[in-house]
Amino acid sequence: MHLLSFALILPAILALPAPDEPTLISRAVSPPNGTCGLVLGGANQGNTCPGETACCSQYGYCGSSEQFCLTTGGCQARYSNSSSACHAPRSGVSISIDGTCGSTGVGKNGYRCPNNATIACCSAS
Image (cartoon, rainbow, N blue to C red; front, side, top):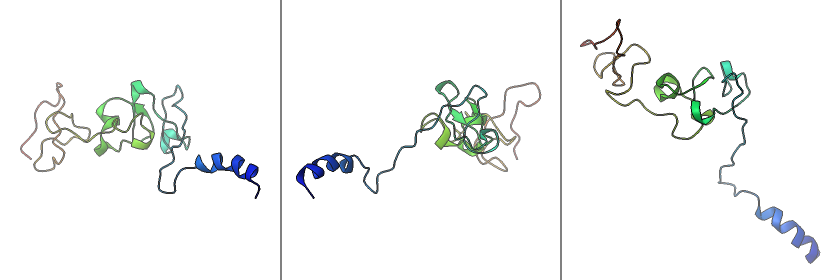
């Protein structure tokens, strides 16, 4: 190989990621209909949620409430706006997304009850 040919190829070789380095995949930001990911609403588009509705729900829609952002609710971190958008419930702080509350009986996630007229307290079970 000529020295000139090697000098032209070397920059391209150096630009390749190392075998153990993750490669970042560029994804489109969610369209106006607020869909994301690959499942259900996302319809195999693989869109990422925008900043104002940063979490991609298990159903493929962008939002910012706990129904969208809790890992226990299936938040899709890969299609959310940042790696910290999806988060675990905070005991006594996160509002229930599945009707359970507390951390005893069926309550496993420490959810608190919503403050509304129909549900105001967490039962002992």
